[in-house]
Each structure stands twice: as structure tokens, then as C-alpha cells.
Image 1 (cartoon, one colour):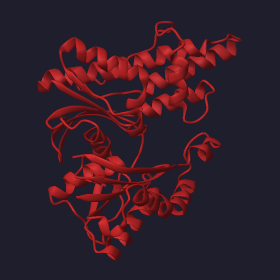
Image 2 (image 1 turned 120 degrees about the vertical axis):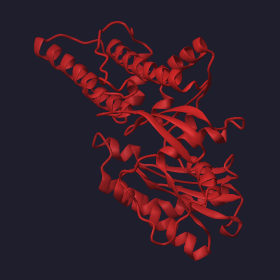
Image 3 (image 1 turned 60 degrees about the vertical axis):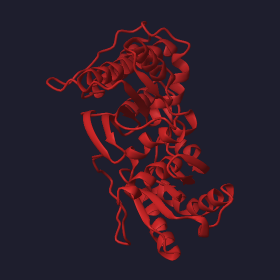
Image 4 (image 1 turned 180 degrees about the horizontal axis):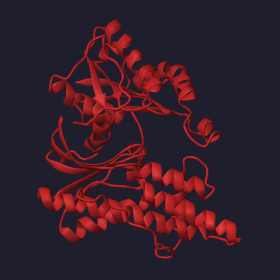
Length: 334
């Protein structure tokens, strides 16, 4: 089954063709990062306009790269939630028009489910059930994947997501958008034990996260140093901050794994590209005899390939939509 997939939940306009949920035939992305960098973050109105301008082109490129025409496609899948509502609407409306014009089934796909499914494209042996840590700019979830379309959330952030925390801390250190990438690079030259930073936890919810206090601690540290005329070693602060975030993510995930008894752990989402997190999870899993699956860097960020992978399993489960499909800014993964 050949699925044409579309993604426009934030600032990447993407299209891909995926066969049977596991074989990637094409993957095209039009990034807006350079433009949003001028403003220090994503501007929703600009993102929506750029999606409108790029979506036809990336769709055509994805079909050409796969060596196909629309006549070779069996269904259209699209991210419909969660994300920036204006950006999502561009992809949803384009997909609805395309599916209706070509008389193809329309498959609505949840963005976080897609991030998890990115791993299916590179690991043929990966099958549910397993435990997954989904970490991105807007989400930090510990999810038990019961089946391809059944999910149980064991833990989630109560305030800032890990990726958001990375970006805000990086901005406070004077790094350009997207800050998480630059902070990761700086951390590789720093001392992870140079600064003692708080490890916030949520009382009574051992698997939930809280990163707002950690972010504030970094901002206050920088402000105090500035007021005193002191210089902060940014590489050391980056390394200490990254080490602390990764410790928190790993600790809660391993607690959840002990509860569920899962021996397979999957990373997903944009922050799964972070070198510190990948190393920390590899070490934690090795110490417990767990198998770890980590997506390649090319599939960590937003892309349409992951939408096509999850879309296949949504279709098999009978999850299709009609022309009344709407976008949702927020929606639980369950």
C-alpha cells in the first residue's frame, strides 16, 4: 500500500511516500528555520503562509522522488493534531482536496504517534508492545505503546517540555534559534558537573516531568552573574544543563520501565537527536539489559515519512476521515 503523507504542524512543510508503513520511498522537507531565526522562534502567521506556498511543490517532489504519480497512490495521510492551528489547517485542507479529487481514502494522523512510528521505517523488527520516551519542543511523554494504534501515557510534563526548556535556556545564553542544537554542541566542550542545578520532581507522580524550575534556575544564574559583572562559562553551563535534563528524563523513564516490565525502549521526537540524551539512554539501557531503538537524525525532527508510517497502521485499524476533517491544536495521544 503506497501512502502519500503530508506534515505541516509547525515550521516544516513536508511530503513523503511510504509503502506498507515500513518502506520509505521518498521524503521531502521545506524548512522555514532560517526565516524564523530572525525572530528568535516560530511566528505562527509566517509559518502558515510559508506552508501555503510550499505544500504543492514538496508534494510534487515527493511523488517524483518515489517515481510515482497520484495514480500510484492508495491513500493520503496528514497530520491533523496537535500543533499550530493555522499551520495544521494548511496541510489538512490540502490533503482533503487531494484525497477527494483523486478519490482516495484520507487518513488523519496524530503528530506524536507519528514521531514514534518514525522508528518503524528503520527497524523492521520493532513491534509493540514497548515503552517510548517522546521528547520534542512541545511535548515530553512517557508512553506505553500497547499496539500500533493503542497508547497509554504513563508520564508527561506539567509545564515546559524538554525541548522548550532547551531552547529557552539556550536563548538566555545568547544562542540563536533553534537553541537546542547549539546548546548540545556547546555542551560537548563543557564540564557537566561544573554547575549544580535543581532536579525538579512532581510529588505523587513519579513519572511526570517539570522543567520550568530548571529553566528559571539557569536564567537566574545568568542574571546574577551579569549583575555582578562575572563571566559564565557557557560551555560548562550548557553541559551541566544538558546533563541535568537528561538525568531527569532517564530516571523517570527507567522508573516507568520497572513498573511495566518492558525491556524494549524507544526514543522519539526532535530532542531524541540530542547527543547527551542518546548517550544517557544507551548507558541506562545497557546497565539494565534493555534494548534501545533510536531514530536516525534525519527522522528525529518533523517530517512526513513518519506520518506515512503511522498512517498505514491507522488505515488498517479503520481510522479514516471524510471531507469534514478538522485540525486540532491540542489532542491527547490516546
